[in-house]
Image 1: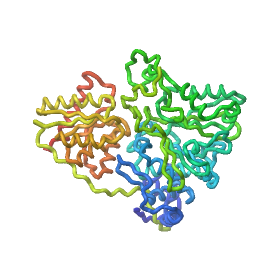
Image 2: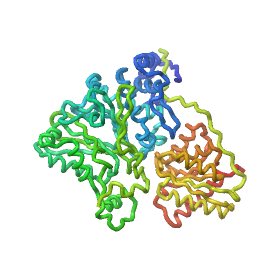
Image 3: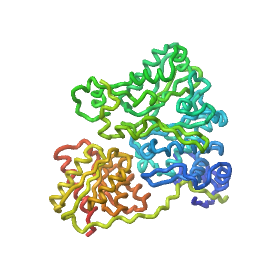
Image 4: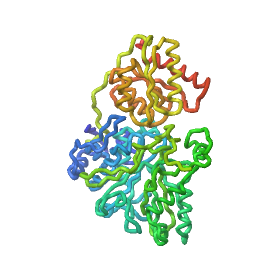
Length: 371
Length: 177
């Protein structure tokens, strides 16, 4: 790694130098001195030249040594490194298609959900304001991932990050599932991991859409509102999404007998839009042809594409839908164990059999369409 | 005053610089490959450019290849078909973040295999194209820049843009005067 020797009067001058070098997200960073970087490297289990993330279009391989510097910049503690590494390994999976997620005009953020015992070890916050600021581990792990994308994949706004608007999750988007407040199996267990295994799941998404009801509602009311949110034309596609239920919503649903597969099946069917609407709204190509007012397409490929998790404080009927951003199925959720020796798990069916990526005309195909 | 040694967070990138393909002295009698990325109007604009080159230079034959996904690099068999069958390639259209960079990547992949290639991007994606060329070790690699957007154009408007593109393609594929 290149070392820059600087003479400064105090720490603030070192921070200013990091801004001037173009290494930051616009907020102050921890200056990555060789002393700090060496300390983090010694605490990590990684060989310095281990490759954690490859991006074939840029022809870039991101090594552990570079990731460690960005973790220091982001304000991570050394014990956060395995979670950052796991998220990067997940994004390295070919089905994540990191190039598209990082470069797209649609401007998604890689949103990381942490499951398993490491949530508690790191003191992560899955309760009130879990998507917002205030927790060291949530904030700095998510920020480290963004700084890796910026500094190692050249994701500079207007250059190799071509987001037309982007969203605030691109600063940092990492939170744990509040498994203890969930009436259901946690996300990583439904994706094939033991409950005792710590994992990260990464999906590139838009900002969250609110599923807000008043208190004292019924399961039917929650699902009616959630269905309407999933049907929204502006982010309708055959991609995936995270549906994060607040504990109160989850309790109401479970008390009335709703399981996760039943919720997924219900929303999958309810999220259908007519092909005519998708064409009118510019989601699919015109012209509208005979039958388009009858044929429909759900907002997913299969019901399990609606990835359910639980998070938030005890009180409040606010849930959130984080839809994948692309017009097609450019990228899917990948789950990776935090321990470095386990393989990452993709979603089935993944992008390999996707009919549409971005503006692919095949997005108008009849896959997933029902009369 | 204190002295600090800051470690750069940038990923070192020191691959060998590729050599760009030699340019043919003329397009007369040449076989031109058209690598469309399946974005709207990508195939249409390439056909119009090819027609211009046939009329202006006596291009002999056109080989068309369509990528199934605009934001995924061209498949190995697509590249091989082009390398085996054509003299030069034109590829279009980079008009979004992930497809402009992939279009540049495809162009450079063909250059590395000895095929002079003209890449077409729309204007807003010029910085993305330059960044990919620089990462690939050839910051001097030039490409055609078209007004954005090209996706909704039809009829005379599309023909006019194709003529503009053909002028740039000529200078990208033929030796500098």
